[in-house]
Length: 497
Image (cartoon, rainbow, N blue to C red; front, side, top):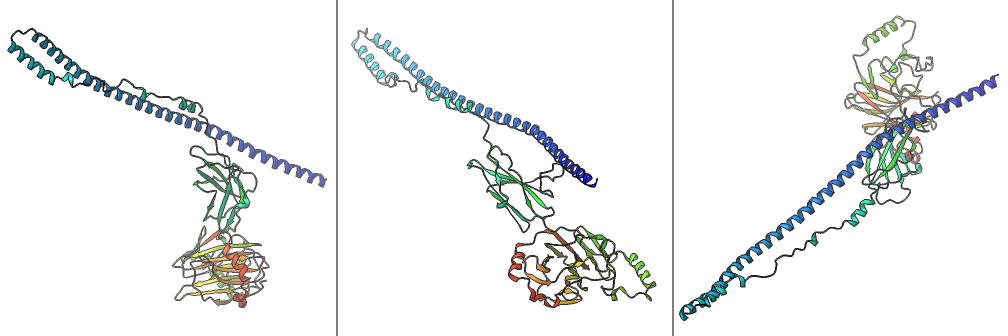
């Protein structure tokens, strides 16, 4: 009976998964159908715009050529009409002189004839008819303004849709994910010298399989990439994976996107557990600020209860950790007394992780480290054998020290603007770095026997916690070269129970 139930349960699970896949595919198809409608409308509009532009160019060319013909016609007409007018005037003058000369032939008186002959000779010498060029200044030829659009007509008749660039190919092996940067590299399946640029799209996701239309975040775009790779920098890895896809574009059209690749971008992301925070701490997102006026009434009630039982119960500050019963983080009370502490909401049980802390300029005192979740509500970070931290005190004079099991080791380095925390749970290491230069500040060597959580103490001021960070390459390199830096932590090395 139980075996049949298990088999039936497996069938139900398989069917449910298949139904989920089909529904996801239906959502994808619906999305694609809408895209076909929208994209068809767009390319039709683009086609109208291109042809309207072509018509406009042809109209402008026709108008320009027509004006050239008319200007040539006007010029030739003007010149030839001037020449015609000059010739007409010369002919009239010459005919008048010819008539006068013909009449003079009939003059009988020798003296009058001589006088007339002299006048005719003078007039002939000055006559315009003998200075005229009897050749047209311009020809009537207009063939230099003829056109032959046979080649252009053939070209227009050969108009077709522009070849679409093929989809690029992304090889995940060529992509690099390091230092919260993602470098995506791709190549074309065949050479295409008409490609002008590429468009890269990416989105964060928690799914390693097929994309889920309803669940996925919107694509973010990087346009006008000239090379065949691009680096996305300054990312926060608050999702397990990142989808990337790319397409090629020429001057007029974009090709299809490449098959999306999924790159792993896991990093420790945690929030601050407000239920653990001391009442004098104000916790908002990744920021912690000390508020001296908060929770005074609650503290007074707690103190009243403590005073009632003072004769029978020792002060919590004097109670050893080992004698106090361990309480899980979810059930224990807030930190109280002088332990201005708040914990992270995510436990570390394995692996290597990194996060950073930046203090406000006016912060007087703060601690950064890790602790077991069993730390008592009156305990301060570094004052128990189950917590490790760096402590910064800017009150009166600066103190910078590593603390564990109520022992402190002064650090002879300047307090950096950002402190990086590297926890190698499996290797039993807790290292602190200058967040800017990645200089090693201090290291603890131990053996973790329980899950640990990030811990933070703040007094007079505030800090900001930055998570979603990968272990920096510089830290990995230092780990190999320093081999644990056991010498710097010898006095505080321990095995926490």
